[in-house]
Each structure stands twice: as C-alpha cells, then as structure tokens.
Image 1 (tube, rainbow, N blue to C red):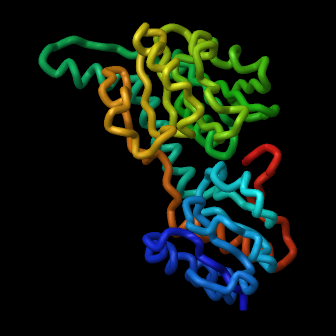
Image 2: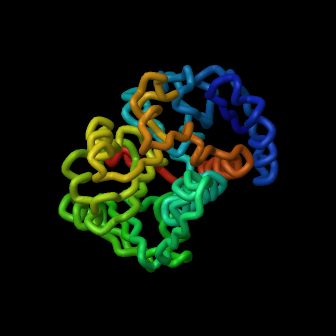
Length: 308
C-alpha cells in the first residue's frame, strides 16, 4: 500500500479526493490517500503551496512532493524541502490558458472594447488581418508554447522570448538578456507567461516598456511580480501602452484601493486564466506516483537552481 498525504486546505479535499482515487485506480495503484498520516509513514505528498504544511524535515520516507499548482515559487526555496518537487503541468489548465490568451488577443486585435463603446453611433472599424498584428510571448514553457502555437494557427506573426534558447516551429525565438528588447520591439500585443523568479521580477519595467511600439497592449496571465506596477501605470498614462489586461497581481485579491481598479486603460480579471482541473490534474499526480514506484523519471521535476 502506498501512503499519500493530501496537504492542501480542507476546502480542496472534497474537490480532489474522488478524482485522485479514480486516477489511482485507473493506473492500478493501491494508494491510501488521507489528510493526516504520521510523517514517517508518508510515501508521497500531494501538495498546494498555501498548505499549512511548511516543514518537510519529518517526512523522511517521502519520495516526492507533487504540486497541485503550476507555480512553485512559494515552496521551491523552502530549506526543509529535500525531497524531489514536481510542478503541475495539467492538460486542462493548459487548455484554459490557451482559451483565455486567445480570447483576449482577439479582443484586442478586433478592438472589441471600442466596438462595444460605440453602440450609440454607426462608426465602422475594419481591423487589420491577423498576419499584420505581431504578438510576442515572454515565456516559452509549456503554457507559452501552447498559446504561441494556437496564435500561429490563426495567422498571427508570433515571437517569443525565454531565458534559455528555444526552437518552436512558426515562432521567432529570442533568448537571454540581449534578446529581450529585440523581442519586444515590434510587439503590438505582449503576453507574459514567465515563472516568478528573481531574474523575472519586474521584467516589464520602464526600460522594457519603452522598447515597445507606442500603443502596444499587454496581457499578464502569468505572475504579478513580472510587471513593475508603477512603471506600467506611467506608461498607460502617457499612451505608450494602450491597454493592459491583468489576471495576476502581487497581492491577491487585488486591494480595493489599488489604482488598477479605476484606471480606464486596465482590465482586471480575478486570477481566472488557468486553474488546475481536478480530473486532469489527478491523472498527472497518479502518473508521477506510478513512475516513482516503477523507477521511472518523474514528470515536471523542478530545477531548484532555476526556480521552476
């Protein structure tokens, strides 16, 4: 029998218990899934970073910590975490991110907000074709690649920037410090899908915002700290950035007094771009436990030095 500790808030238990047990059964795994075990009896920890569990030292038998979230920034630096850590790459989450990004890129591209605002008068607007609207992704991991490829299928010229070299069909790829501003220089729409690390914090700041074509638009469904908020507000006020749609923030929920709420060129969405889906995420967890029990490499193993 494999002992798996479910270490997330109690409210998540009813959401995940049945899908996880079904996924274990489908993989032929005999797993005792509980919210409470003696630490020395735990083989795997199914984990959410906002869990009360923050000290991993007593879990001496644990083979891996399996994150339920895509982001690991809250846990990766925990000095007590010596077990392998796997981030969540959930097919359902990926699909929802592709839909959110594609929907908002098309909203910008077709100028849907302005069309709605013109409901009291006849004022035709003919948007350019997709092939005339360059889009740049900052971040070409699993989510960035999936979204970039979806937009290439619609005819958008897509560029992407990553910290390390990437090769993605149909996407012009840049990397490293020297590639960031060239990647932004023609971007009419920028999509941020980078992890939250020391290297990526404020990657969109005064200097990089100035590198964009005047009137560029921004989508951030990635991480709140990727944007220097004060610099973005200044760029919005001058018109250097025409609009920003933001799904993630440094503090969540976004405080009621935050200037983003009232700014006419900002759309706030409440961290809804991509949520882990219990059924598909449970299959990922089950697959990793199966791999751990059959001496196969774990999926989506986090590189502690890179931070993701």
